[in-house]
Length: 319
Ligand code: GUN
Image (cartoon, rainbow, N blue to C red; front, side, top):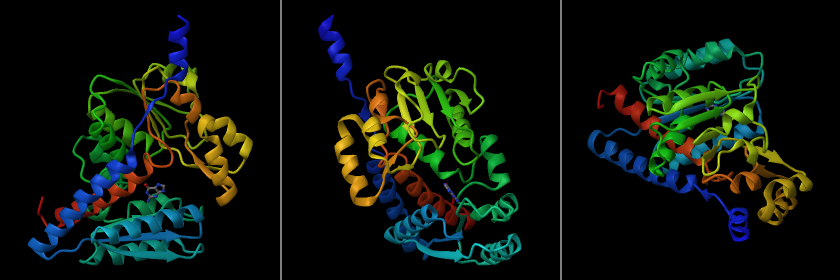
C-alpha cells in the first residue's frame, strides 16, 4: 500500500517532443521544396504582413521568415506602422494577391484595434491563405473538405498522430474557443472520430468536464490555469499556452523540481515561458504532456511552411 502510493507520487508524464516532430516536418518540407524546384523551377514565396510594434508578433514573424529561408523558400516581411488603416491593408493585399510570384500570404494577428480584422482576413486570396483564416477556408474545414488548415490545430493533430495517441473514440476536451486554435482544433479532432467537448469561460463545473477527457487541450491564454485536479490520470495533455512570467515565487510554485533552472532563466532574461497548464501538478497526473517551450510552438511554424508549399502546388494545379 505504502509502496504503491510512493510510486504514484513519483509518477511523471512522458514529455511529447514537439520540437523533434517539427524538425521532421521541416525536413519533409525541405525535400518537397527541392523537388518542386528541380522538377518545375518553382521556389514558393511566403509574404508575412505585420502591423505595429507588438514585441511578441515581431519574434513570431522573424521566426517564420528565418524558417522559410532555412527550408529554401523565399519570403518577404512587410512591417507596417501602427497607423496603417484597413484600406491600406486591403490595397497591399490586392497587390500581393495579384503577384504571380507570391504563393502564401499571412497577416500576423493581433492587428491594431482600429483595423477591421474580419475584412482584412477575407481579403487574403483564397489560394494564398496559408493561415486558413479566410471564411471560405473556415467553411470548407467544417465541411470536411479542407484546403488550407490553420497551422496550430493542424500541428497538434500531426503530433497526436505521429506519437501514436489514439484519437478515434477518445474523449477530447478543448479548453478555449478561439477561431485560431480552439474551434478549428475541435473540428479536426471530430474528423478523426473523437468525442469532442469545447469548454470556455462560462463552462459550468469545468473540472468535472475536463477530468473526463482522454485528450485535454489547453488553449486559454492563462498561465498555469489547468491544474492537476482538471486532468484524468493517464490523459494526454496538450498545452498551447505561451505566457511570460517574471516572478520567482510564481516560478517556484509552478515548476517544482525544475524551478531552480527556470529561476535562473528569469534572472538572465527577465522572464521564463509557461503554458496554460500547471506543469508540476499536471506532470504528476497526466500520461503524456507537451512541454512549454518545445511542444506546440515549433509545430505551428513547421505547418505554416507545409501550407506554403501546398498553396504553391495547388495554385499551379500540381495537386
Ligand atoms: N497570432 C497568433 N497566432 C497566429 C497565427 O497562427 N497566425 C497569425 N496570422 N497570427 C497569429
